[in-house]
Length: 421
Image 1: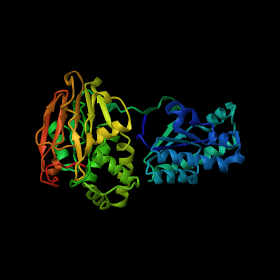
Image 2: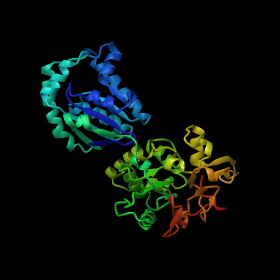
Image 3: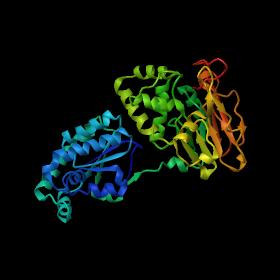
Image 4: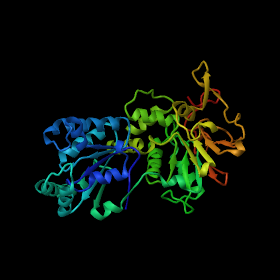
């Protein structure tokens, strides 16, 4: 049994004392990802078993979780969480941070929980408490599947606790073949036509195990940005696609988390399309975008180093590295000043690449091109579909280019042909 969680979410453990929740969590998650009510009691009064410190301990428990979610970190809430009120408080914290909630409930028999509790040296709560917890768990197990606020409910028996695995590394990263897709910008119809042309089925899987890799800028300017976001979210959530965020994506993420951003360069159109959705669908899409797309790395190195993908490109010395400068480079390119109209002046980093033949094939997008060209073992796959051009994909390792024309012109380029801020 494999439990899959998005890169950013709140995982709430539900179970009786002695059910093995904490042991299971420590096996599958980093210590920094686990926020434990026992640990909070110990931090407050130096005693993890002190029930008199519950009020202050849970104030710390909730504040700690809120801060991790604010900083978009996967968080495991380790308490009994048996009563609806306890879960409600945690769900509200996740809702405020726009983070999905997954429940992991531990369906351990009463006699086993009592035995495990008796063996604990640090905090034994006793048979009566465990029995009460088990009775409350029975009610929780009936309630949890009906709670529409939850993104997932996983119930583990004693046997499953020992054998269950948690999916941490996307299997898509290790696929042998990829299809790198240029800037979509809300052109859902063209995206589906392109995948169909490459040989993907109706559920967007490929008989040869190929994996689509999106170079970013999924939304803005085009006719159906919510549809594209939904489509790619579902693929990434199913571990059927990879994605690196572009500058338009980053701005969208900031808007969805309440950041102050200007609704320009097509973001106003995306916002209008989102507001036109039914409220529950919009909220679910927002959660999924922030959970599955926002945390993705700014560049990918695939195929044992033979392939690299970044939205606006990346230099060889940056591959595998992380910094604010590299993030800006991958989102905007090699910007070296600004023109009087405010548009960036970009240096052609690809033309300066040395020994490209000996390095990874670098695939990127960001700047629309009338024709796809390879330059020093790099390729810009932005065919300007939203401006009436074409949507492009590069099959790797075949290096075969596949394109579909835009159905129509959805947006106008700026004077001089420049289109990106």
